[in-house]
Length: 86
Image (cartoon, rainbow, N blue to C red; front, top):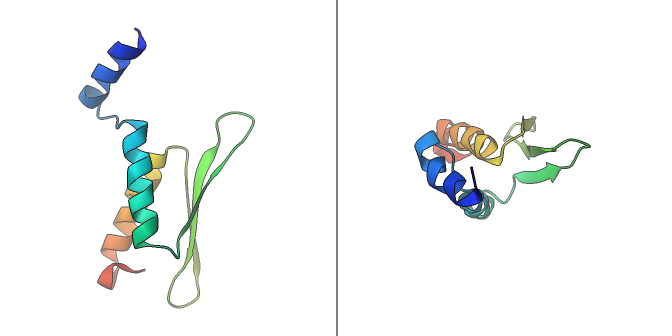
């Protein structure tokens, strides 16, 4: 399967284009500047890490190998909290 075929199959398998996730990351960072999101490189592939302080001072951390999954978790965490801020 060539690169063109892979691009066409992504929507069928529910995989988002990487650029879509970068735009989503930028929007999330604009809406939640108090959340730190970084990519940590390892000898294999690396992972995405997010940290933020809740109102009571508790530090929350989320780790995922896929940016889409990390953003999904953050969206759920922030939408579930009252007023959109955990």
